[in-house]
Amino acid sequence: MPLIVILPAIAFVTALISGIFGMAGGLVLMGALTLLLPVGAAFVTHGLIQIVSNGWRAWLNRADIVWPIIGWYALASLAAAILFTFISWVPSRPFVLIALGLVGFSVWLPAKRFALDANRPVHALASGLLVTGTNLLAGVAGPLLDIFFVNTRLTRHQIVATKAFTQVFAHLAKIVVYGYALLFTAAEGQPPWLAILAAIPLTMLGTRFGKAVLDRMSDIGFINWTRWIVTAIGAVYLVQGLFMA
Image (tube, rainbow, N blue to C red; front, top):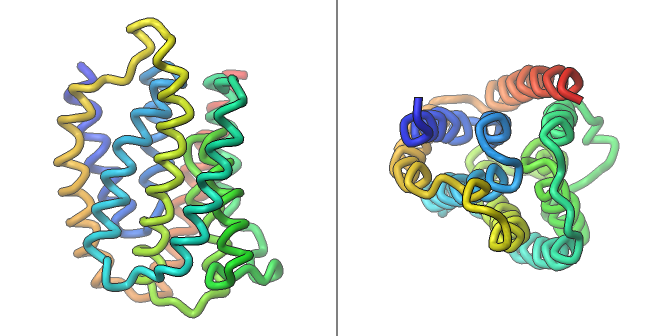
């Protein structure tokens, strides 16, 4: 099936997942794109779709955004993007899949022992550097971002809204870094622009439906389901990447 059919369908499903859990959808989308497109084009395509998905999710939950976290995170994302701009390296497909798998298993890190709290400026800066840097290597870093929210006294809506807005900056950095490299590649290495345009409205629709499900969940159910779903996705990518390596 052509990408103009496949990509919008995948975008809808993954936006629905992210709209509910605040992550996991991006992990699924990045893995699918890595198998369908050249790695550089997959990174840019993922970044464009995820900016729409995360931006729309942040807008739908805008009343719950914790703005001080956003400011510090954005500053750190800018620093990470500038650093990676000077590194002319595009990871291989097996590397990306293995990295995605490891990112998925990061939900089991003993976050409470780290005593990280995104509400603290230094920790918000650290999260921006770590998450944006990992995003530029693996394409996704949502589960890593979660360890900075475990010790915060935020509701599930505040977590989803604030994480969504921080990820806008992380994906923007990915578009800038890999998009710049694609300017000098052949046409077959370019993102599927028509498929991306077709995917945007379905991404917004999936995000809207995801919020409706989120409103009906409890905070405890939200945390438990998120961990197991992300772990299962990570396991699939890790095995796949190891077999391709």
